[in-house]
Image (cartoon, rainbow, N blue to C red; front, side, top):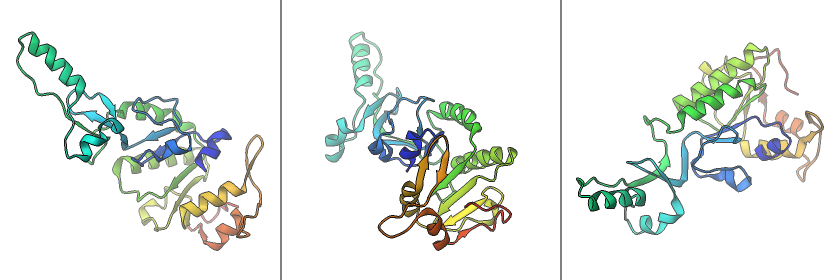
Amino acid sequence: MLQDLNKKKTLLRWYSQNIDGLESKVGFEMDSNFSISKKCIPLHGSLHFMQCTACKSTHLFQNYHHDLAAGHFPICHLCKEQEDKRSAAGHRYRMPGQLRPDIVLYGEQHRQGEGIANAYKKDLTLDLLLVVGTSLKVPGTANLIKEFSKKIHSNHLPNSIYIDITTPSKKWQEVFDVFIEGDCQIFAKTLRQSMVTSSSMIFQPQYNEDNMNLESYLEDIEARQDFRPSWRWL
């Protein structure tokens, strides 16, 4: 669904909490080098890469899969080469760095935090916020969502939407305009089948094998609009 939106040039950015690199399977560019031009930003890093604990260089995970499977913690070959040069020159020995998954754990600073902050500032031009399938409990991600929602509402747009199988707590009522309680995978599939575009996004009934379109889907799952009852989505 998100790649469809991207191809239709309606996707401003995808901030992902995935660490499995799933986005690359649908064509999003995912590598260890951050660029503000990329459509998908992995907020918690990626398991497809390893990072050196000393020099902070990144390496492909697949190159070390055999070592890891054998129970060995890989050493950074760049650090090792540098240490060999130091040793040959008679300098004091320094322990080469080890490689760990290039993901961000709780309490750690994101090594690409500055780049993400710059992307966030650029993305304050958004006019629709779609938050899907997250617990809203990770502080950094929660703050990002709140700031984007605040920007949308400052432009008098009731376009902050949350989709999940779990009801958000009351503290989020001023953040989201619409809460859809349901399976996000079914929502994505239904939206793809209902999506038609010319110069902008429009919704048009298109029936699938289950005779379901976006409007009937939202009616069936009870699109709860109690947060902003004066606004109707469809």
